[in-house]
Amino acid sequence: MKLTILGLGYIGLPTAAMFANRGYDVLGIDIDEEKVDEINRGHFRIEEPGLKAFLRDAKNSGNFKVSTKMEDSDVFIITVPTPLKENKAPDLSYVESAAEMISKTLKKDNLVVLESTVPPGTTIETVIPILEKSGLKSIDDFKVAYCPERVMPGKILKELTENDRIIGGIDEESRQRAKKLYSSFVEGKLYLTNPTTAEFVKLAENTYRDVNIALANEFAKLCEKHPTSVWDVVKLANNHPRVYLHKPGPGVGGHCLPIDPWFLVDEDAELIPTSRKINDEMVDHVIKLIEKHAPEGQIAVLGASYKANTEDTRSSPTLQLLKKLHDRKVKVHDPYVSEYDSNLDSVIEGTEAIVLMVDHKEYNDIDPRILSKKMKGNIIIDTKNCLEEKEWTEAGFKYVLLGSNKHD
Ligand code: SAJ
Image (cartoon, rainbow, N blue to C red; front, side):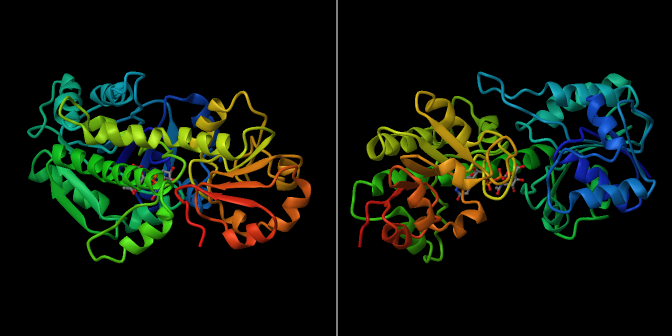
């Protein structure tokens, strides 16, 4: 079975390797010639546990080649990005041009699968009309399904196989063919539905998470006005069998949660844009904490990535913080992101305050007694509740925890 994957990014590349390692004859297509050359030379830009070895296995299997040029295929899978435009409208241009490329090669009985995150209705209203420029008719001549990826960066290979998957086919045969395709590596359940439901489900999942985080962030700001801590409130409330509050923090980053909820927004949406605003403004709240507790002097920011233990900085709250703190002297530490200093001692040297933005595992091992000797000031602002208040206070620090005004 010949399978072509269009878009060799965070999802497309591991998925292509997955199919190749399962015996499919895979052609990976990307419009970026440099990236295609790199992959052909065995160099992969994506940092993901286990991925390099997995991709090498795929290349060595002889089943996996990459190119900028399309060929005939039995199956086409689209895994291109869908960014947001300046006005928060989805930019479907990559999906459209991938569908255009397929329409020029499409043959009778082909199956086309869209995996990219898209607004509800995109498969039916945008992708199929472009594919039908081939002169072939969907359902009668070729099959189509929307099957969203749902993997967590940092666990891509594990979640690709273990997670359940939604299969949104345009008819029963499309659903069955897509189901067979994914059951070659998915160990989770495969749920069958129509394309628009599948598109909505993907967006509902990320919007649920974003809205829930916004609620936690709102609680954090409210808790700061009372002798309590949002972290205790979340932990204790989550003992209730029907409550699952998320964690507050300095904002929501990554390439999914800050973007996908906008794909659902129209004139009837109120909660979704409000939640986005709350999460985006958490960086301003961190700045307020800095202005209150460390109005002057140099600041050391710990963590630049969008979440713990990754080098991925896309839409990271720290990058927003740095932009907004442009009039302060700031040094940034990150053990994963190569653009920043990975030597903690040199970053905190002479600083007035530390602002911890990411709960990288390395930060659990910091000894505050050593840091306090090298710093000028003694302020630590913990936005992730990942440090021990007692330990830092005993080392002479003023420990400030986002979302907390509890001191007993
Ligand atoms: N965050 C919080 N509080 C929390 C959880 C997360 O502030 O309780 C922040 C993180 O620090 C980070 C941001 O949210 O800045 C996003 O991180 P994440 O771990 O929630 O999600 P992503 O973007 O890495 O991956 C999400 C996942 N979606 C869901 O869990 C519903 C993943 O399964 C999706 O496949 C992925 O988006 C995607 O590609 O859409």
